[in-house]
Image (cartoon, rainbow over all chains, first blue to last red; front, side, top):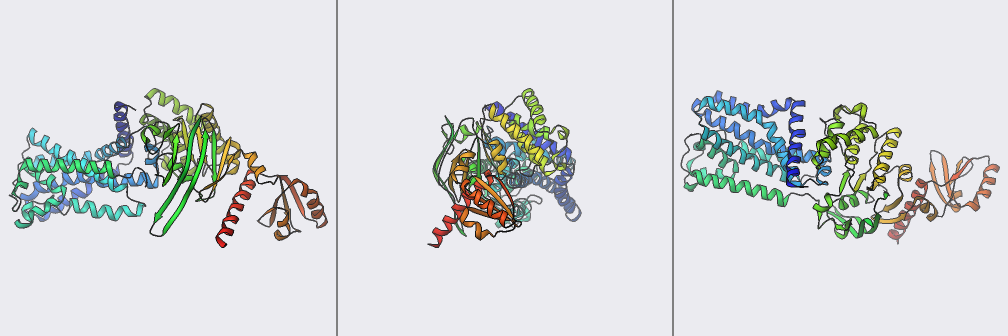
Length: 254
Length: 310
């Protein structure tokens, strides 16, 4: 199969697993909105309104990051319960085309939520074309990072029962604990650098900065507050996770 | 030319609970264009063999070549040539049978027009036309399985792996699927199927192999298998005999009060006379593939038990 047919295959997978599933199971729309919207509502009620832009950015990145959780669930489900991954992988389709097809499907499900949050964001901060493009770049990297991680983890499950606890541990620690819904300044100054253990902190700090929210200098490692370093960190982490997904994923059982 | 050649193929599963030898130095070959059945009990090693041969599982030792290409070393090349119906696979819940076939063909590189035409042909052949636009989630288990098989058979891949393709189907549906499988073989595909329906193996396959405990016990034709067990006649008795009494005449199976004895032609007269004297209802016929299979595998199990006891 040529590159052109592989790209066409990615589109077909995205079409039938993403768009068709979404139109036939509209509750998926709601599911993608509900969790980040709930956090947003909660913060709107209890936190000072000056923190609202941080919470909206949190909603955007949460949606992008949760494509990884969806990817992990769906890939494990299609491999273990439906055995469909085996049907697609034992074909001229390249395994990576299958992964990208699935990743785009996850993105398709998230697009309505992302769209809504970006609209909300435009109501609470002034957005320029440049800041929107930069934000889209951060979303793209977050999606690539999260789906690579989700796929990689999915290949190690031996039964469906393992998905729920592992998914909760991994994606909650990546999305709720780090400073995504709140500013990093809420963490004591001496410990802020530790938040960068989570890749989502790079994403949130970058997103905060590109839309003009104030980000404090990170003591101990001040370079972490610079945009070029954050971009480099985010790109490097995304590439690392993609490489790990390509190299470590268990396409063939050992 | 051989489509598949396995040499000294072994697979050991290791876990905290110990090791399981699923395949033990299996040598097997399947000629190109052949419809080949792989028979064995649950856990005998059939699915492990299929997983290795289709590149889904790595062997512990040995090699498998498909059309002369090593499946471990050149997985990408091999994938161009194959399609697989996995054991107990299920279709996407939200897609219709038509969408399954069209989309799978398109993902494999078919153009829109050819995918559409081929889909129509396969839907018709598999008896799925009345359900072509019904989402799989509301189809019965048998129809879902038919959808999955249709999706794979539509590819006309040079090598088709069908792991229990007719599981859960009614007898009419099974015959429809058999016909589509035969058509694929006539068009040049090599088919390796596993099944627990021995009548299916007898009807469909040109050659078969029997596997037990990771060893291939037999490879050849169905008739030759019957000869191999050296039992030509099946006698079924209702009343008048005990299984122990008949054991010296051949292989004995008891099922729902009926005793089945597989024996040689020269013992039939004596046994018929005895049955008449004891007023036992007797039924005589040729040995079936299922009975030959039971005999062959039964002997292998007995040998293994005897070895273990020694």
